[in-house]
Image 1 (cartoon, rainbow, N blue to C red):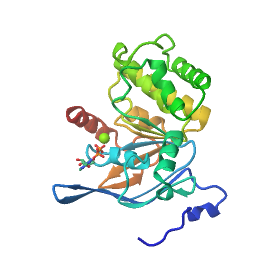
Image 2 (tube, helix red, strand yellow):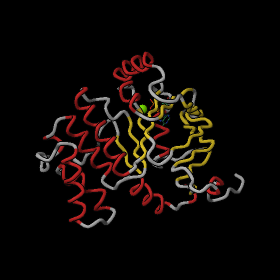
Image 3 (tube, rainbow, N blue to C red):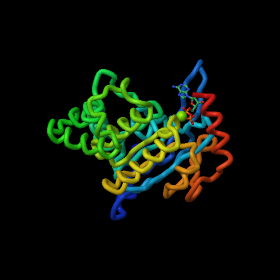
Length: 260
Ligand SMILES: Nc1ncnc2c1ncn2[C@@H]1O[C@H](COP(=O)(O)OP(=O)(O)O)[C@@H](O)[C@H]1O
Ligand SMILES: [Mg+2]
């Protein structure tokens, strides 16, 4: 690989974008064969951007989120975050960066079963050495915001699915991340709970200027975002505002139900 500058050449602009992805590729090796899932993905996300991403099941949406979130490595290309090439960070720096700057919301919440709702939300802050009192204060505020002020001491098994998802959302933003990556966050929720989750997204976006990249089959959600992307054949295409293919989305949603 040729030597690359450690910062984005776009830093010559007054401020680089929050995220700049250049020529990103991801191949999986499986059964002795290479499977190219991401192929020359180019993308910019500015601070505070609200971006939806759609695409058929298996096209690589989750893979893109994992690679952007640095929980999986790309096989080609570069991710710049605030102008810094993430491949230049050590493992320790990368872990610190991930915990402080990125929030994840998965379709399944991955809450810690032996801890209460409050403890689950406090956890990322405590890991980042935020004081106990500050972590508690932030967690309480967020749990109030997601309407779970009366469920603080419940363990995940004592919460409904929608409540668990809202705890997971509060946990994802307790560090006030610069970028929230959400993988079908409303996929398992009824309309009302899904709407409540969306309201929280917008509140967080407003309060902390958190940029969001949200994989969704929901045209209603995509319509509310400021930008929409579509994944096709390993590439990412900008499709402007709103949902590009409402009918396609409904079809995908049906497919996803069967697939998951
Ligand atoms: N660890 C892996 N090893 C091999 N193939 C994988 C791996 N993870 C995902 N894939 C394949 O990559 C493709 C994209 O997967 P994914 O990103 O989960 O799609 P989407 O989220 O769009 O439904 C799928 O065909 C899947 O089978
Ligand atoms: Mg997926």
